Length: 275
Image (tube, rainbow, N blue to C red; front, top):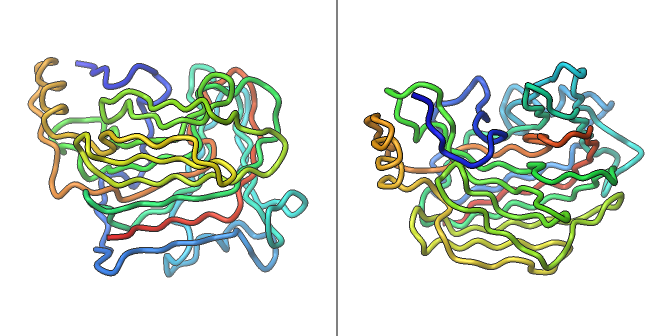
């Protein structure tokens, strides 16, 4: 039986091939990852060294309209010599995705997570519902239930370019801001801060170009009772796996459900977990 866990089809499927693999990093002293996409020769493979010190994976889901693109750019940069260029075609019967992923960390309930990056969206078209950042737990899914949906939260562009916090995959409503519309064709700094909780005492903050545009309490992790009830309503026994923690984040066009191709650039990514 197909479950309707969210209101938009575009965020129903979001897991890559390494879903369900629990991270080994326990983050006893916190966790910090930073990357400005610098390489010695514009070689994308340098972002994926064998020691795992940089990025973990690429996610690219192409449409019938053509291949998406993920590469390094040297002419449009925020700092240094490189940025990451993402070109995501418009979705058709396939949901278009093009992003880069970092995994192998452990962000448990009660910890504080900060994700920051600089974005340059080279488009003037309507980008409502474009997803830019996903924070997910694949290992919290009940292994007895097929189609791991990797519950989590995301940054989504809402109407009139208002970047907001989307919570559909944890059975919550979108936290929408209307303070600042996302500027186009220029570098924009985004900072997303969370105190993680499966209850309403979670903290959700969003800053655009150093201005706080959102500060609201509310759950930002999957809630065991909500998931059990939702699945039970569909006749399925489901148990959220514990301990509960987020284990990966993706950045880019993590989904482009818009009717337009989108080109964007990313630089100066920072991901931090504080206990």
